[in-house]
Each structure stands twice: as C-alpha cells, then as structure tokens.
Length: 333
Image 1 (spheres, rainbow, N blue to C red):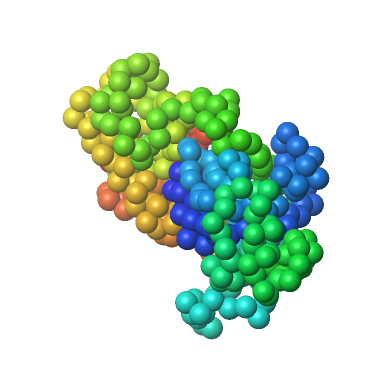
Image 2: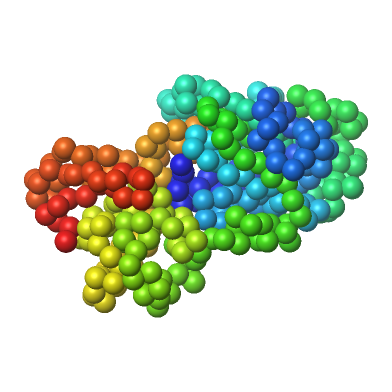
C-alpha cells in the first residue's frame, strides 16, 4: 500500500499538472469503487467542476473541486493515478517533450485502467475560469472558448486536453465525492493521528505518544495510524534501522536520547523518500507511470538474508503485528 511519501508525491504531481483544469467527462468499468453514489450520480456531480487543488491526509488523496466538493481517493494496495495528455493538435508551448525519455505508461503495471476523468486545460485554451460555481462553469467556459462552439463539443466528447487514469489491478481502491466541509468529519479521517511530516508532529507530541503506549512495541506503534499517520511497513523498517532501535523493544524501554534520535530519523527518512518520489516496492507508480527512486537506497526492507551494508551481519525478518519487519541484529539495539 502506498505510504506517506508515495501519496505526497502523487498529490504534488496533481497540483502541478491538473490544478485549474475542468472535469468534462468521467468513465468507469468498476463502479463498485465509487462509494455512496451510483455511477450516474457521481458523473453528474463532478462534470463541469474545476479542480482547485490536491492535498494529502495520511495515506489519502483529496482533490478539491469548485462548488465546495471534494474527491477523496484511497489507492489501497495497487491503485495509482496516471495523468496523460490527450492525442490532440493542441500542444502546450511551454512543455518540451524528450523523444529519448521512456514512456512508462506502456508498462504492464499501468494497464489496469478502471476509471478515467477527462479534463480541459483552461490555461491552454485561454478559457475564462473566474467562477468556482459548478452551475455556471460549463456555460462560462464554452461561451469564452471559440475552439469549442457548443456544449456537446465540450462535455462528453473526445475533445479534452488531459485524462486522469486510475490503474488498479486488484480493484481495492475507493472513490468518494462529498462536501468539502464534511471530509474532515469522515470516520476514517477523524480517526487518524498526527501526520508524520506535519508541524504538529513535534518531539513533545512524539514523546507523549510513547509515554501513553509504554507497553507497545515500537515496531507496531510507528504503524498505528490513529497515533501517527503516514508510516507503513516499508518506512518503519528503514526508520528503525537508521535510528539503531530494534522493532521488538517496548516504548517504555526507549531512552530520551533514543527517542530524540528516532524522532529526527522519522522526518529524515520520510522527507528523503518524498524527494526520491517514493518507493516502488510493488505496484506504486507516479503520475507519469514511472517508479519511485527510494527502493534504490533501502537498507533493510526486504533484504533478509543479505549482508548489512554497515556491518556485514545478515539482515533478519521478524513478524510483528502480523507484518514482516526487517532489521540488523547488530546495528540495532
């Protein structure tokens, strides 16, 4: 499942690529992923809305739309979003293509398309995007756009500039459309703890969490989303290795000095992973369909039986909290 760095990478990509665009059509071959609405209801509500921006809460993606609506997407195990340009005569003069660059969209992992959002680029078409109200969006855009002379040419046609494709081989992902003000009140969002890279995640807060869960194993505690949101199986192993702490130690047994080091390492590892565009351990891909880069610098995750890069001791794997955690029995105490 994509963790904080992967989801942050996708949210950042979406803000660069689709912010300000308008949804002109929607297609799905797997309507069961859409929760709380029929496919027809969902399509009717999102078509004509402008994309105001994307953000992340925990491991969840939120795309805010005009008219005070928000699209909530949980990628689950194998979901990932791809942003593709339309095969159109309209080209953005500010974007230069590299003919030698690899087309990752053709990779097999990107071929399990379950949903598509068709978008019109308001900047590229020089369309008036002054309104944030859905009821007037289509009319205003069409009236100001000589390239698209009527609504039928604008909505439900193949005249679009981009498409967001949702690839999900196992069909576990979830899509929700709700009022923006209600998103924070969703049960699964309210249950989340402090975000692992937020300003609210201070050492004092981290210290309090460890004190509250004195008997919890640190290898489990780091993955408890109701305590600290965003850390998953990959990064807990890497964080604990970098901090030199064994995953089976209880929170109460971790000294103040070790706690400070562990706190700093959490931020260090997660921020580095964001810079390297996440870890492609399995199905994760960015919006270009490309793998992340952090898997190239993994120290222990999925390296059981290999020599530790620091001390040559064999990396071990242990099941903690029904998940495998990887560690070096010499470097970690």
